[in-house]
View 1 (spheres, one colour):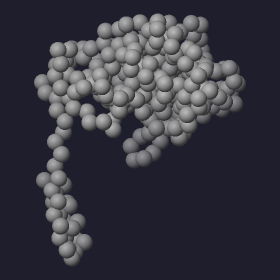
View 2 (cartoon, one colour; view 1 turned 45 degrees about the horizontal axis):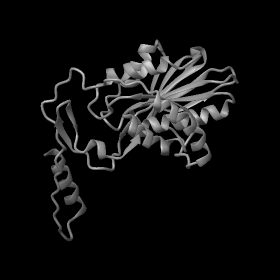
View 3 (cartoon, one colour; view 1 turned 60 degrees about the horizontal axis):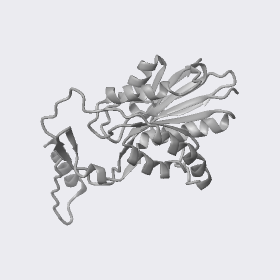
View 4 (tube, rainbow, N blue to C red; view 1 turned 180 degrees about the vertical axis):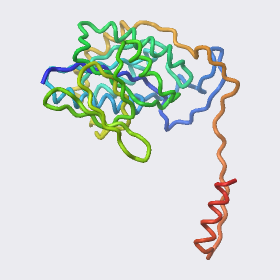
Amino acid sequence: MKPLTIIVCGSLVPDPLQTLEPVATPQGPGLKNELMLPSVLDPWAACALYEAANLAKQRPGSKVYLVALGPKAKLQQLMMTVAQKAPFTLVAVNAPAGGFTDAKQTATELTKAIQTIPGLDWSSTLLFGGCASASRDAGVTLPFVAEMLGVTEFFTGVDELTFADDETFTVLERVEGGQYLSSTCTGFPAAIGWATGNLPEPPNNPQVGMMNMRGVMPALMKAPVANVGVGGIAYAKTEVPSAKRATRIVKDLPVEAIAQEIVSWIKE
């Protein structure tokens, strides 16, 4: 089995367990107290990173690159945790990252960062990323990156990737009805947009973290500054969806009557 180069595109997002309240800023829409919000690696990108590390472990000599875009200070804080999960080489871009940043501008900067990786051989390279995002969820950033890099084989919503003895690989993509579309690819490069995959979150490994941090800090120091904004999109209004709750306590109501009330409420 020949070694692979696996490039994972993944940026930080505000912790979805926090209260995220949109506000208007001079630069466009943003989140209230955004600089104070704790950040996590985008969950779908995290799944892609775990899958990449697992695949690289099965093929000795393989290398994993994590190409991350975000404010340098927040990236450094995030790497203290992510670096303990899996071995990788960080390629950082110092730029704003949030729910309203333009997907094409983000993809352009990620592409520039990927092109700086020395000795990149596309005949043995896979491009990984999340099929969606916990921020804007445009779902187009990875396809943009693949197109800009000339990677024409693209699969999204992937839960499984397996290699055969002849170096072809098969991917399972989610489709409607809880089923999978099985596709076989006979060559490289290819772009894989991961769903949740099949792997659990790896436990923290301080030794892996120390090894990664030797390269993380220099990568952050030389991270290029990029100006990523909201693009040409104009937001008329941003707000948190209103919650509606109507509770009524009754006793001895027949099951049929309860079901009818639920159906009536849904129709309304």
